[in-house]
Image (cartoon, rainbow, N blue to C red):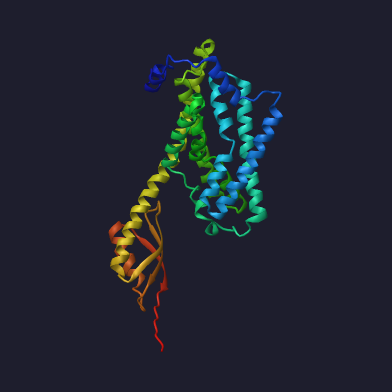
Length: 345
C-alpha cells in the first residue's frame, strides 16, 4: 500500500459522537427544507447582491472597513459548509443542491460587480487606476492558503460546537469570499483578464481549503451518524482526497508566485541600498523591481532629489547589475525638490 493509502487507512474518526439533537441543529442550519426553499434562496441571493455591492464599493473606495462589512453580510459560507456536510452524510441531493447554490452565488457576485463597474466605476479603465485593495487580491500566495485552512478549521469548529457561534463573524472576516469575486467582476469589466484569474484563484484557494478543513473537523467531532459511519467515513476520505489534490494543484502556482514575490522583495532592497550610494540626495518615492524569468531585471523608480543635476541612470544600472549578476533595465523619473524661504518687514 502506498504511503498516502496507509495514511488514509489509518485515519479514523474519534470515539466521540454528536448527539442526534446536535446533529439536527447542524443539518437544519445547513440543509434548507423544500417547503422554505424559496424563502431561503430569496434571502441568500438578496444578501449576495448586497454583500457584493458593499465589497465592490469598498474595493473602489479602498476602504477596509466597508470590505469587512461585506464579509460579514456575505452568505457563501453556508453552501460551502453544506457541501462538506453532504459529503459526510452521503446525501447526493443535498450535495448537488449545495453546489448549485454556491455556483449561483458566485455567478451573482461576479455579475453584480461587473454591473457596478459598468454603471459607476467608469474611471477604472486600466489596472494603473485601480486601488491597492483590488490589486492586492490579484496575486494570492501561500499565506492566503494558510489563512483559508485556519479559517476553515475555525468554521468547522463553530459549526459543530454551537456554543462557540459567537466567533462566527470572526471566521467570516478571516475567510474573505465575496471580495475576491467582486474583484473578478471589476477586472473582467475593464478587460484585465489575467488579474481577474488571480483573484478567482484566491477564491478557489479559500473554497477548497475550507471544504477540506471542515470535513476534517466534522469527522473528528463525531458528526457522521452511527448507522452510516462506515459509508460516511469512506465518503469523508473521498472528499479529503479530492480536496487535498485540488489544494495541491492550487498550491503549485501559489508557491511559484510566493517565491517570485520574495525574490522581488530582496531585489528591491538591493536597489534601495544602491540608490542611497548612487545619489545620497535622492529619496525613493516609488519603486517597482521585477526579476523576470529570462534572467533580466527591470526597475522602475520615482525619486525626489535636491540635486540640480541628477546622477546618470547608467551608473545605478551598472551598480545594481553587479550586485545581482544579471542585466538590468532601469527607468528613473525625477521630482526636483525646491525650497524657498523669505522674510519681509
